[in-house]
Length: 639
Ligand code: MIC
Ligand code: SF4
Image 1 (tube, rainbow, N blue to C red):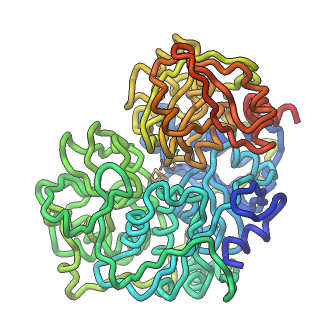
Image 2: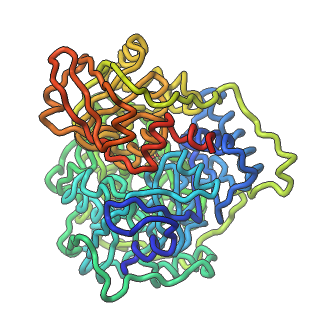
Image 3: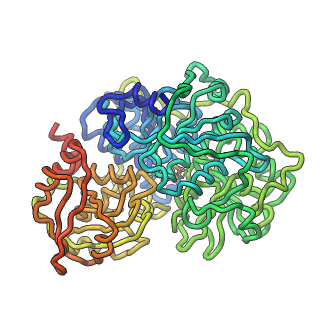
């Protein structure tokens, strides 16, 4: 077996490990972050269980840390008290980004991890099967339920040879994205192997597994080997190490070979992580902002690499350079070894250890200017600026370009510098910002601020439905399009009635009022509908507005699960049907619930044209029950 198959089979609770069939796996660890966590814990509370049943569950605060009003701080207090009461560890705001901290302090080879954030596979760098999911799925895992997923195909990404100086792990994953695109990983686990992985440290591996999310992959994973042992040892966690490798005769469903020596520094152009070109081709493009950070490139090694370049240089007068360390550990390490001093002397703006600009919490770029970021996503408007021009690259390319003021290939800049950063023998380990669960949980009172509103639920699926297509959109619609984030909207994550006013606000600001005026309706989408973030708000808020069905050419995995969990029926239609249905069309589903119950497709008619169509629901028995009940919470309540 390969590594992915070993992990699934050792956690298999139900189902057959045949690609395409549904399997259930037991979950050892969970993680949440604050922007998805409040909902997840409200859902967990509704299940009436007194203590989490996982081996380890951690609640992080890293997204909503701006505190422009009372909302974020109230949510943090809620999360801290919930964690204390129900047996979770709580990582305080300022301690770092969930994925970086989890990798450093908790991820264990051989285990499974479910996280309410799409970049949870970051932890796959140490040989843990790490999957991103909606908050409700994570709540169920905390309640001891297994996680259901369609058995993925396993793709072997074989890395051969060694990276040239100036080329980094970020360039490897950008190359994978260039070849496979943002939908190339759907229904797949990307398993890395080949002699090229031997020299990659765990944090370099994490850059690669992290951005597997942008491929739409179910997960990404590396074996657990001597690199893993060295990393865990430096984190004072050698006891957590086990060896986990693929068998010599293991088979894969697909293979992709990447010759590392042939790679060049790469860059993703606005506004999709798969619009990849060589940095050289874009050289000379003026840059106004550079951001180094986010969960994909904010490790100790990334910061040291950038600091080496910045040493004895100044940031270009026209550039604003912002650096957000991924964790307090990384910040402490660069403080101690002097790298921070180089960063500060160069003229960088040092931000807190959090997601920050990656999710539009500050640092929105100036109108019509280029922002170069080491992040993983550059979806339109995510930075907070309409018509933004965000490019994604490695910390090396970013640091060099911050000095020159234009996009610059870093290769000529490395004379006398170390091409890569050695793993330190010991990291500074100080877990004082991770608060363990209370010894006296009964005495803990959960504190709820006024921003925390109860979860909406919908009734059972309609037998007959007549509804309007409220919005027709194109391919690759992201959950940032459906439910934007940023400094204004993110604080409303615990308040569905309030946040629902912003559904599709960047695509069509009239959507919420039109949906309400029509008493709900339907959304029509293209290929890969709902790619990106795991935010279940992209299902919950439309459900609150009365959206009953999404018709699309295809769906992204996590979003499809979220739609089902909240009782919105995802239906697949072919391109010719998509082309024939207009925004505003009124559709009738004469036997909706019956079709879902009894067949694999749903029949509907366009009232105006009189044409009849059939859409596939492709739901499993388990998913049908959820949809018919009007969502997972109704099922859980029914027992
Ligand atoms: C993101 O990168 O889009 C986020 C913010 O981390 C999301 C989670 C969220 O929307 O809260 C994700 O990746 O799942
Ligand atoms: Fe945070 Fe950005 Fe990573 Fe999402 S992608 S977890 S917003 S740093």
